[in-house]
Each structure stands twice: as C-alpha cells, then as structure tokens.
Image (cartoon, rainbow, N blue to C red):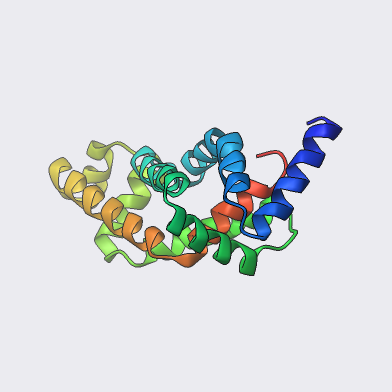
Length: 166
C-alpha cells in the first residue's frame, strides 16, 4: 500500500466513524474479495462463507443495515492486531458449533474441521453417509443462524476489514 492510499484509507475510516455512507461503500468495495477469502479460511465451509458474504453484499445496498453496522462498529472498534480478530472470530464460530447437539457437533467437526469424507465420518460414528449429510445440512443452518444473529460477528468482520493486510 502506498503512502497516498494509506492516507485515503485513514480519511475513509474517519469519515466512516462519523457515519459517511460513501466511505462505507468505498471500503466495502476495496476489501470485499479479501473478506470473502478470510471468511472461507475461517469457516472452512464454503456454504457458510457464501452466506456471510451474501449478507455483507446486502449490507452494501441496504442503508438502514449500514447505519446499524456503522453504529455497532463505532462502539466496538479498537486498534488491535489481526490475530486477535481471528482468535475472536474462531471463538465465535466455536460458540456456534457448541450450540449443536453432540452428534451433530461430532459430524461437523469430523467433516468440516478435520476434513473427513462422509463415508469416513459415517464409519467412525456407526451411522449412514446420508445421516452424516443430514447432520451437516442442519449443522450449517444452525451455525449460520447463530452467526447472523450475533452482533459480535458484524463487529468482528468490520473490524477485520479495517486491519491492514486483509
């Protein structure tokens, strides 16, 4: 990033904190692809990352939602390192996973976290691959709802947006 771009970014952040919608849109357009990549890396689940990314694309078009997010961001923003955001994001995801039933949680961990196939997970758990699939669909839905209803997720993603090197 050049010195000029860095100054522009700081100016946009200052304007964003005072509620400037154009600044929000410019920052969103600048960082949206990087955010999606981080979401995918964080969630390790393309469907969840896509859902979250679609939500933030909606934010870019929805002025009322932007106002809410800017308000939430302004309250929650602090100058910390990227690893803190990633740690907090991981904790948020873990809390979402912890809300799952024990079997659904186990299936999710085996397939999404450990990368096991449906057949491998089914064999380990003594259930059918279709049951594994059903558990994953329901787990993804539950996690998605938890994340969408969490004010922390909005603040964390916006904070991550502001961290250099995203």
